[in-house]
Image 1 (cartoon, rainbow, N blue to C red):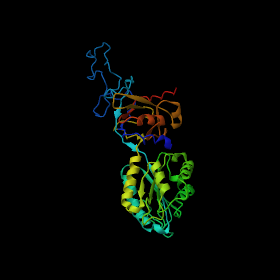
Image 2: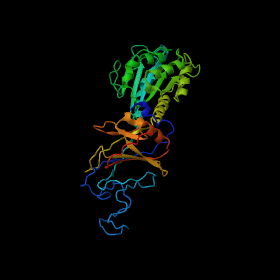
Image 3: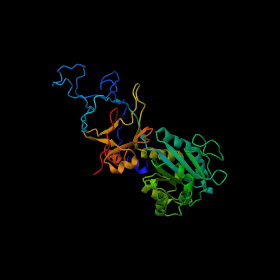
Image 4: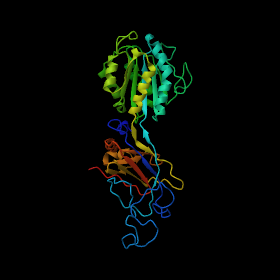
Length: 390
């Protein structure tokens, strides 16, 4: 899924409370009647005669309950209730919403004045990445820096690195070390020039973070770098820039990193002061920022069905309730390429072997406007297609 399809959650969310994901029960006449059986997770049904008789407590003379075939979602959701075939049943199975992954590119100055800083990055980057991993965010780290035998280089130990220090530490795809020496004034230039060496590990659905660590100034204007970086890949358009540079003329400063600070502020990144020389605090702040920026993605893993149930890909429906009496149904499309032609929609990651349900971009945009809500993915009855736009 393209980055623009996964980042709709970043702004304006007050964590959307998702998800009541349901597993499948086949639409077969051999299934137990809806609402029956001893599975406590069966979706409740409104109305209907549940005692199995055919007498007239129903208030009509057709021998059937008034509510037969109508799903009751619990509260008044505002979603129209639709008649379902009598042999359909639904089994609810909770599943976790996934967080947006994060790709982080470190560019570290290897000049002679960066001895302490290189040591601190090497010592703290494992704990930094682990904090992000422990939060549930799938993180990939790229390090653009020389190795220790070339200036103030860096080699990262396991578990983030591969365990081959002091010369080999790349552990793709989680960690990629680009062996390039970075000078005092050219971190942005080296980042752009080396793109071909790390572009393959960057993911279109991930948030993109850059972290520049230097004790000097930049030779490249902010506007020039911003335009050049975004031109490398449309997925970088919402990148976040962080900086660990000198904010004042302290004893550690070869120069003040004004351009780096300004771009960090413009992209809502972290601008830490290298003069403080507290890299544990810097990495704590960075990890918190990355975690908070990885909001819930517009996708939900399909859980394993309960015992005795079977997953049928063509028997899935999706409904949203905003928690305040409103909501809407989301119809299915064959693939992401069909999303622009419909109102609201969802699709499978792989129609032949689906494991994840994904929302179309416009549906993500709509969902992000709600402060709370639930999504019911109801399995067991024929999939409803998304209505066409216009």
